[in-house]
Amino acid sequence: MTADLSAAPGAFTTAADTAPSVVQSVDWLAIAPPTLTALAALLVLVADLFLPAHRKKLLGYGTLTSLAAALALLVPLRAGDRATFCVTTGTQPCSYTADHFTLVIQALVLGGAFLTALLSLDDTRKLPAGEYGFLLLASAAGAALLPASRDLATLVVALEVASLPAFALVGIVRGDRRSSEAALKFFLSSVVATAVTLLGVSFVYAATGTLHLTEIAARLDDVPPALDTLAKTGVVLTLVGFAFKVAAAPFHFWVPDTYVGAPLPIAAYLSVVGKTVGFSGLILVTVVAFPSYADVWGPAVAVLAALTMTVGNVAALRQRADRDRSAVRLLAWSSVAQAGYLLVPVAAAAYSSDEQIGSTVAYALMYAVVNLGAFAVAALVSRTHPGNRVDDYRGLYATRPLAALALGFFLLCLAGLPPGIIGLFAKVTVFSAAVDAGLGWLAVVMAVNVVIALYYYLQWTAILFRSPESPENAETGGGAPASGTPRRSPVPAPLTTAIALTAVVGILLSGAPQLVLRFAAVNLF
Image (cartoon, rainbow, N blue to C red):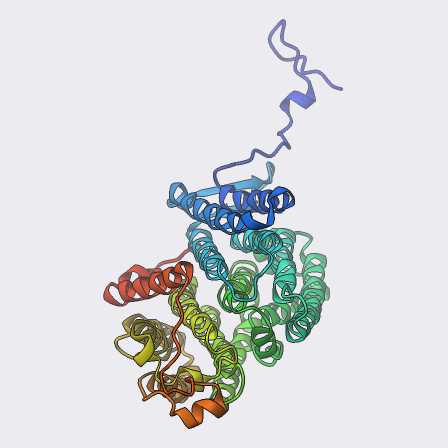
């Protein structure tokens, strides 16, 4: 211990007193949304031990309430100017940042989890409320943490916290062989993706000596020649790992069987929240951490985008309407194609400015609303048609006109046709991002794929308004009952609410698309 003898008489200052503090302050408000969600998960798990069987439904409502509260906690953070867990020396990089990008993605994933919980309240397969609520909240907590992560360690941990409970959610239906197989395939593919990502992260750390994204970006500008190959390999492996997470081709093989085998609410969750988690991580590592290697990841992401949208649309085009669970399988392949569109602005950001990322965020918001709505209607139809074939939607307008109109609107939004104005504008925004970045060939590929997708979206929409199946077809195909009168059953209030919420939000966004498209014109970081 040394003393400062030049100080005024009576003053005795030690080196420890003058050294910078290494104690990190915590901004509890900034981390409140994911923290509340995680605490609620533990509370639901503990409450499940003490609640009698006839009160287990309260756990579902508790899950809904906690997710709504987490969404409400985003309101005080709307300025997007908070950060915490910051290094107290040097340039002071932070591990958690609540900027506008973080808040928009957190609103999307928590809202998606809320609608998933709503769809699950009256699931016909009687999901175990306690385990289900715990796993859903735990996954949502990781999903909310990921967009705020600003170092690779936190990013990988958040990614796994979001993914690990999802494996169990896919296989949560006891005694269902298809569900178990889907969970296993999802688990194996995700483990491979995690291993590849960790290997890439370790290479990047070895080349730069830091885990903070902004520090990595600065140090990659001046990597020693001996470490350049290592750094480039780390960048590529990290991208491959996230390509698994976003279901980009050729790493998409797990999607159709996983969506078909999972409970419908979980398939909806994976298609929206799971995809958003992957894209958030991909955006952070490319735009924030690896801008110096845009010449490496830019062309790679552009090729992935073209390949993904083409594979997804061609596979969706080949689905047979009379095949069991063809409706869910069609939505699964559609989600692969949509992932291709979402990749376009990420690729464009390598050639122009970071503002292109806003186009991905705007498109993701549109896609989340209408895709969750489509799955909600699919959950409604599956109550009377467990096979959930596309043919089972024939004549839906005659039996449930509002549900048919809602599904028709959702499908037209996904296709980018009026009256789904928000879907049209979102596609134009993504298309413009490619053109502005000089990726004319990618814009052409996207235009061709949009035309291909029109066929299966419009075909499904047309089926909704055709005459119901004849009694003869119904006896063999499982459609309407033999009397010729389509079956009806009471619709649970939570399911009705989910369909109504997504339809109202979709209509609102079509009437005022600037609510979403404004994100495409600003830098969210």
